[in-house]
Structure formats: C-alpha cells, structure tokens
Length: 547
Ligand SMILES: Cc1cc2nc3c(=O)[nH]c(=O)nc-3n(C[C@H](O)[C@H](O)[C@H](O)COP(=O)(O)O)c2cc1C
Image (tube, rainbow, N blue to C red):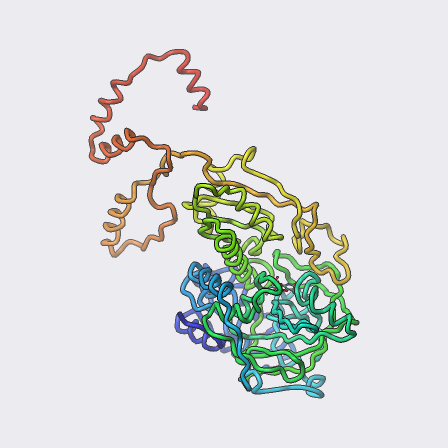
C-alpha cells in the first residue's frame, strides 16, 4: 500500500496514471478556472475525470499569481479519492478506513517542514495577505463570495483536545475571514463556547493542500472525544502524520501542507454569510451570522499550490468526499460495532453523499433488517431515505437498486416513517426566511417534524431464480467472446448470471438440465401427462393471476 503524506507525491502518482491535466496557458480565476473544472465534472465519465493543474493563474484585473491551482485533488472521482488513501479501490479504502478508526496512529511533531518555507505576518498581511492566494470563483455569475472549504484545526481551550473539521472560510479582507462552521459542529459547539467563556478568541489553522487523507478525516463524522482525527489519518495510511508548530498560535499543522492560514476566531464579532454554493446543488441564500477570523499568519511552501474545492451541484469534490466518508464510517459502525452482516454501505453522490443511505445486507439467522435500518437511521441524522437490500444487489448500481425496489419491496408493508431528521441545508426542509438566523447556519439540529423513510427492499420469501443463463453458460460465453479481438470488452453488471433464490424444485432443475441438453421433447412428454381439460374455474384462476 502506498501512503501519501505529501500532496505533491499524490499528484505525481495521479500524473503517472494519466489523470493529471495541465493548463499551461493563462487562465482567469474569476471567470474561467472553475467553469473548466465543471466541464470535466458535468461532462466526463467518472473514470475519465482527473486533477486539473493550472500553471498560469490570472486575476480579473490581469494580475499574475506565483501559486498554481490544482482543482479536484480531493474529490474529482471516487477512485482518485481511494488512491489518495493509498488504495486501488473504494472497497479497499473502506477496509483501510475501518483500520484507521480501530487502530489510530498518533501524529508526531517535527521541528520544521516545507509549510514554513515562507512565513508572512504583521504588516505583510495587511499589504498582501490573503490576496497572495489564487482563490477561484466557483460559480461565476452566482457566487457572491470566494472561500476555501479545507481542514480546520482547533483545540479545546481547557483540555487541549484537538478537532479537525472541514469548514468553509470566506474571504472578506486581506487578513479577515468568516468561518462557515455550523453551530452544531465540534469547533463551534465545543471549543468556541469555552473560548467565549474565557473572554478569548479561538485559535484556528486552515490547512490548504494537505495530504488527501487529512481532507477525508476532516469531513468524516468521527465522534468527538474519540480518537484524534489526525491519529485516524495515521491509522488509515499506516504512518504517523508529521506536524509542525504554528508560528503565531498554539496549534500544530501538517508539515507538508501547501498553505496554512493561522488566525483567531472572534468570540465577539460576527459577519453575515452571503450566497455561495452548497452541497444540495443550489446556492445557499439564507442569511446567517458567523464569527470573523482575524488572520495572524499565512505560511506556505515555495511555489505553493492552492487547492480549491467544489461544493455544489454533483458531482463535486464535496459530494465525492462525503459519499465516501459517510459510507465507510457507517459501514465500520454497523459491521464492526453492531456486528451486522453488512457487505456495503453507499451514499450516492447525487444525493449529496448524505440523503440516501443504501445498505447491502447478507441474510443471517437472527438478524432482522429492521434492526439494521433503525441503527443506520439513528447514526445518520441527515439521511432522508435508508434502504436495505439483499447481498446480490449492488447498491452502487442505480439500475440494480431500482430493480430491487420494483420487485422486492411492498409499499404497504415494507416502509416505515420515523421522525427526527436533521434537514440541514436541504431546501425542501424549510421555506426561505424561516429563520436559520444568527449562528445557526444550516439549522441541522435534529427536528422532530422532519421525517426519514426506512425501506426494507429485501426478499421476504423464496423467489424464483434470477432470469439469466446459469453461471457456467455465461462463463463459456465470456471465453468465446474474449477470443474475438474485435469485440468491445464487456463490463458485466451484477447480476450477470442466473442463480437460485429459494423457489426452485428438483424437478425444475431436472427440466432445465434436459432443455440445456436439447431434450425439449423429453420435457414435453412429461407435461403431456399432466394435460387437463379446460374448466370454468381454470379461466377464473387465470383471470385472478392477472393474465
Ligand atoms: C468541502 C467540505 C466543506 C464543508 N464545509 C462545511 C462548513 O462550512 N460548515 C460545516 O459546518 N460543515 C462543513 N462541512 C462538513 C463537515 O466537514 C463535516 O460535517 C465534519 O464531520 C465536521 O467535523 P466535526 O464534527 O469535527 O466538526 C464540509 C465538508 C466538506 C467535505
């Protein structure tokens, strides 16, 4: 397994795999850069999407930036996200994630690191400060401000307990940001009130261009007071993360990060959020007031690389990241915490990686699918739909899911509504102007009027076989197919062969064997012996069967 403790090593690997696309011509960061990124996100298949590297970034006023921009580092595609965790597939990454949560590896502090190659403080901040960073406009024509959505480190002012959360920071001046951290997330709910009580601001460090695993752990619902997110990161990649001490605040940050913004989050002054892109795929327009961050230092590598993040219409970095971290974390809890025979958990990106929770469950005596549904609904406060399917349904394949919902689910018996969901920024949750208000950005607190739909789409009794050729015949067909060099390589969807599901007799098996041997006359002889005369009852039976 490879482990990327440095984003630059990861970019080198992405390049080696032909997924780094470089733009060497001047690109305008206000009007061109993110639209180019959106062209690939809305226009290319996932396996074709990559990291876009912009070498010559210009501002709307024509100014040149010495920093490059790498877009899509953290969530251009789910296989690249897995690669960033040192894995070749999402499946493998889910197992690594479990390893990280169960065997965290504490970070280590080193004396110096590339992130301190350049340090800007004091007067330099008011003269250039955040203007040095080539922050692109995400949705030109609609975005009303620019931001980063990067891992943000804080510590409990009393106990020193660290938290890392991915929060937006909105640019408001050369040395002034406004945090996007919602009031129920750890930095705001646990650290900020303690700082406020002490009459102090809260030190924060925003880490831009850290190793990919940092972004994943920062976005994940890792229980507060459990393992340090940075130790989980170490456990996932199998090596401790190296940290350096910040220059102006009592925090530590990854030594290889591209850029770190050090600052003090006010516990006295707030400023309004104004419209910006959010994960449901709409602009967030609700007016909310959140604390101002006074920047105290900007440190960065020589020729630092800025990493914007797309939050908004799917597919976006945000939705890819949340899809993975929610799926992998719930998989860990259900399978290894509760001991349910869960094979996969998936939150589709188009549902912002949070609204649909799909669980693939192996049948096991004594395991009631409803227990699994209720456990998942309790753990994922935001999910609107929680659906459990059999182990032969690939939850990552929309068609397979619709097939299961069509033929293994009875609306009158297999659906339950439970109340108490956190609608967060779901625009169907609350009408505009209904008061998220001061410091309640996202209004994600669980509210009892908001419902969740639980669906048991598993078979309730024995079913006839899946209607495809049996495995041996499909394998034979594949072997013949592969000898034809001119034919396209098939990518078989599950299920790709027929199999029994409990409703198939010995006689059915025998008939099918005879038919595959070309002996239909023999089967016909048997059915001839079972001929019956037409009766009125028979017609009624046929009508009842809906024929
Ligand atoms: C790109 C990105 C941006 C995010 N921005 C915010 C944000 O501005 N505010 C917020 O409350 N959560 C945001 N989140 C979600 C949090 O990072 C996530 O809920 C995380 O679990 C919070 O960590 P915490 O529980 O340690 O506070 C964002 C997630 C991603 C992936």
